[in-house]
Image (cartoon, rainbow, N blue to C red; front, side):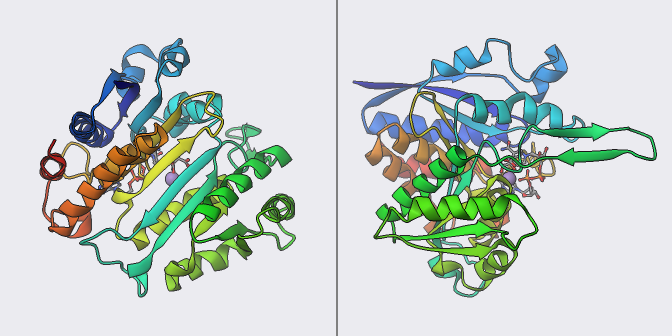
Length: 350
Ligand code: NAD
Ligand code: IPM
Ligand code: MN
């Protein structure tokens, strides 16, 4: 019998609502497809920080390393600085476990109307660099409270770092529609971007069957709104990929449906799956959060674990339920998180 251990971190805000939803659907799909899922439930996050002064325990990484994958909800609370919550959990996991690819697929799901013309055929994947670039640890704030007060952030792009994410994009495009768009800003202002372009170009040149282009990030944002279905794989730096993935989620109806895989392609550490959205403090605790982003992320996790049939069944069941009009408020419906969860587990059967 196939058996997997999944570290479960609901975290903050609506993470507490959408992770239990995913757990119920994962249990249903595991039973049906005859494999075992054991959850290592971790109460890490802002509540723990308030109690013990740290988002996660000191031996946290050993605990995570013992799992086959990590399923995360979200972190972030309005009254705790994001520097504490994000640098105390999310960002260190991405870095310590070399999850250097952040894979963010998007397509229009059934029952949803895209807010833009041509949105019916959105089917793309953002491959976001996930451990360096604009999110470097080099920089800081100086002279607080003085006239010369300032803040500095260095972007760090390494050849190895750009090459490996470009290779992931090339491999992925070869399995999809064979087209990579690189998001750039290489008009001589941002010093790092001509280097990004050079390394992406050199890397993708090794893929004879993959068409490639580069588009300046500002023009790309506009192009995505005007003609979203022309895109297949978009490779982007950490910050550009972050922004573009909320945009593409919105083009397909809501940020609440978007999944994210923090992938360690070498598999020498666990990968982590989470929705693209955050803790959504404005709707937390109301039972109205859309669980679809979390469920889609759970499906990506199953695929990563090698459970392709179960992964397809889970996402297919979500789509079947959406086609019947079981939609949360963000998508114009009136279903609660619990309604969607019940409909998906019933659809899975088992
Ligand atoms: P957010 O993604 O939490 O919310 C943005 C908007 O989208 C809100 O109006 C929210 O209600 C809505 N929304 C998000 N997810 C939804 C869902 N599943 N269903 C229905 N509506 C949904 O972004 P924010 O408000 O800018 O950030 C809130 C906090 O979350 C911050 O502390 C931020 O740093 C953090 N954050 C964490 C992660 C993460 O853990 N990976 C990601 C993004 C933001
Ligand atoms: C995301 C989030 C994070 C990011 C934040 C919370 C640090 O926005 O996963 O998209 O920028 O990576
Ligand atoms: Mn983001």
